[in-house]
Length: 45
Image (cartoon, rainbow, N blue to C red; front, side, top):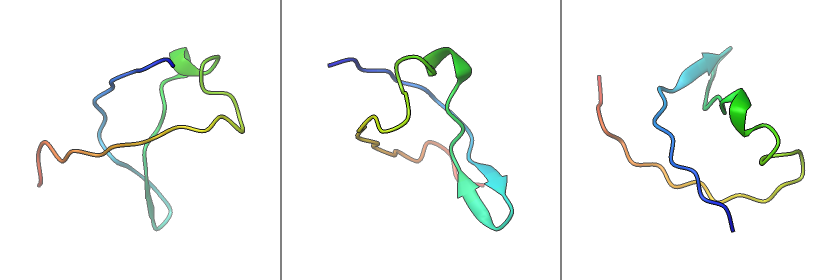
């Protein structure tokens, strides 16, 4: 099991809030890969 920790700002795509995954992780996170996402809010504006 590989584990990555990234800190990101939430982006906006139309009306939806999204997380953009860095391109450097593209090989590890191919389509149909099952991942677990845990979200911790560090700062609320």
